[in-house]
Length: 295
Image (cartoon, rainbow, N blue to C red; front, side, top):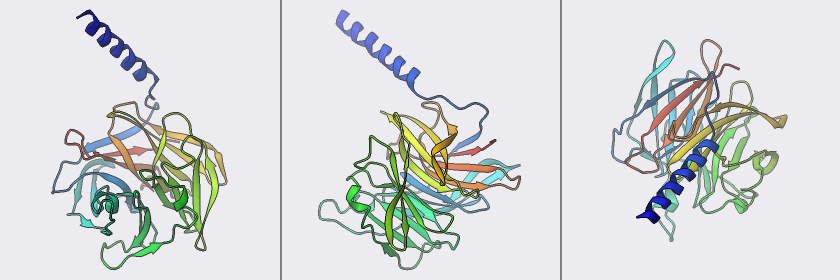
């Protein structure tokens, strides 16, 4: 009994120490969050998000290889609800090792102003682009120069388009995992590292978007068990070594935020809209979290 009590006490001390060390909310954040209840079979696992300039229409992709679009509802600018349609398969490309999971694990999403959607998959690493109407054939993007650094469960976690229309990609896990996060850009069909984004502590890339201000916004998450914490840093692509921390959530406040869309509202304020991945667990919710930046 004494040994059990000692073990329990040590466990509580460890949990308390971890909790103290985990990040806290940034002050003065204008944040709205809502839960999106399950509405169809296969719902959840959302890991990539894009949002239209009007802040209403959005597109999301899932770990199970589906894509859908929906509409965000607001009253007086405040997020109040979400509607989505039944998801459809993106691209089922079986592999001999695991035709289900390996083929369908979509992790990132980016959208051009023309409406073209590009989707990054991990495990079976590939990148495809297809029309925003979710119909029609898709195009495969060559990953030569990038694919060799991707790990099995560490693919293109963050995907965006530069102000010039070039694809930007940030791997979650790569040979660089413990150092800076390499930012790749695809120009004239060639992938090159254009920056090494500083990284520290528990943070790993989860999603990205280039905002209407031309800055790169990088969503990162920290995970200890089923305790999640998130932050967003803003990078000047001409000076990526000095990012601004614009959002940070305390541990456990939200779920595993993985998708990010950045847009400007009618008041001229930059908004960050994010969605959580429920990791396929019934006890985790799908959340939509929206932040109005004040600086």
